[in-house]
Image 1 (tube, rainbow, N blue to C red):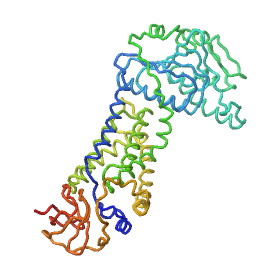
Image 2 (image 1 turned 90 degrees about the vertical axis):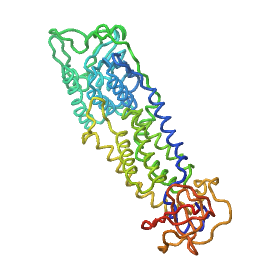
Image 3 (image 1 turned 180 degrees about the vertical axis):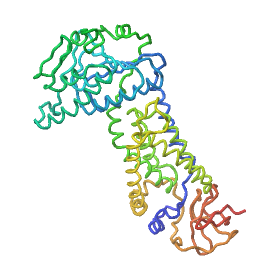
Image 4 (image 1 turned 135 degrees about the horizontal axis):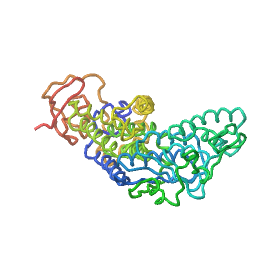
Length: 480
């Protein structure tokens, strides 16, 4: 390979048809497998356990990611039940509706233990579980939407938001067997509640204490299934016998929000980094950036509860097949196609919200956002790669990416590589001008041409001969 500026400025990347040493790419694979090993240790739920997921503080998108991950771990392990240990004054209603859909998607029985608050958005999350238990001193309700700073919404906006989200509250209550009028009264001042002897008039938001929520009217609890002094007491009253397994937030949930939001850019960085690395050879800065982007992409998907560690393994296998197709046995096609299929499947799977009980065949709704993100990535890559090919070799950054340790010692080659087809014949002899690893350039008479080996590495100044001419590809081997 030649790293002098004159030929590269004339034909950027033209002489580099294949990557450098395949062994260098083991570092990328090892990084991926290290991530897989770390992620596999994070899930320790066992069958027959009762999984406790704390919902503490403000309801946010990060809380939703944490809940979704916990639900999928519990479902995959066939846990007996999931208990939300809740103490929140509320938060983002959009995040609460996402949590509602996650709770509706799981097949594991769900219970909320309110200790001590389930206010605003927390009330909606509690209604999304199949049963509610409350601590002796606790409350649920008062879910009127407000602005981020706590101010009331403008009148028209208030009416629209209340109308929209009250539908979520009513549907959550109705699905889990609660009275929809109670759910609506949590969010709307214009709703009244008449259930047997219990009456709540219009004009104020409904808030229920534990004693009010657990009272029995006409043989049925008003809202809560009972009052429990603690989680073990709740297990007894709910008829659960499994051991308690508490899942704690990893602290990366907020990071996962940004990583999943920036997923198309992370994929773009990985693709462009791999492309540059294949063109330059070795394992340098571009390879490191590509590995980092892919690691962050899959790590974000795991923490966000979108996919498990298996997608990283699938991606690593596919990437290995693609690199082997390019570097070790070019032209065989099948390993490369299989690798592309595995990589594409892993990328889409990593962005797809699928629960363990659902079919392996994804629905159109599951595929919608992954395909949109992948489309954005492909579009940006089609723009970025030609620009990089045209301008990167003319910049000082190229000398940083093309590691100095890989440059060939000796005088620069001033000759230009030929741009027109060269008439060579099989068996013709020449000399390698750059390292053929496995691609590079060679001299045949007065012409300098791009050549490629069958996978062997040939040092500069070594005699070579033409093995085959395949279209524009000149395949060579070391001469005897």
